[in-house]
Length: 165
Image (cartoon, rainbow, N blue to C red):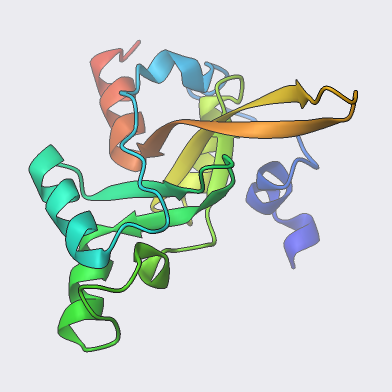
């Protein structure tokens, strides 16, 4: 069950990156991956425009973020194209109709070990930074900013190019 599954416990913050024989990179922070700035789509972008932008910029996926900063999910080129071809959405529909709203998040301070556990089940994780914002009336809220999208290929590239045999 989930409560005895180390990967689930790590993913949900109940267990630190505990592993008996950790690889050399296990405790290195996500910030060392040298990720490029993400391409962000607003929710009102049409499926047609999303396809054009992703192809033009050479990306296969992008986070969908509301102007308020709320992370709505991730859109992928393959899911958008197949949804249009299958007739489930129209080119003119907003990209939110093909957005994956279940995704994992990591911070720059999280370990590559935690990221590795997340990527065992997920194709990507969104790298976020949280900051407190205050209004003129003194109320506060936490805002998340998307700093990047990380995949297993990013982790593998880092590990193989910095291999400490």
